[in-house]
Image (cartoon, rainbow, N blue to C red; front, side, top):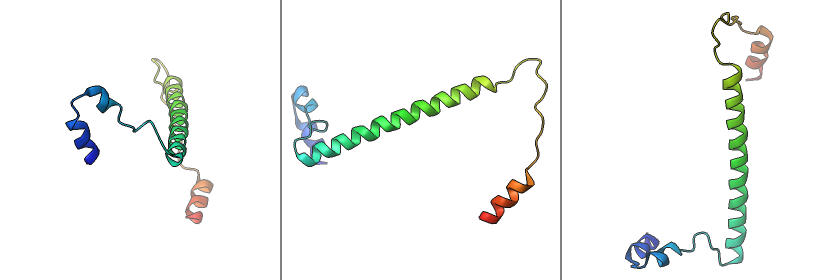
Length: 87
């Protein structure tokens, strides 16, 4: 809350923009910032993989004109029994 008041009271926009959120000054702050950046890049990589898989599935399994209706598949009893037993 104090930092928000500091930013709101600052008349100079450049000084408010230089708020040290992304400019760590201590050893711990550098290690935390590095960890945060690593997590950010990992999350972006996962996002790209998931978005790519979703777009691939949407294109591959879209409804096409003249295609026969999909075959209905009922449950797999062995799989369902195994799932029920392990729960």
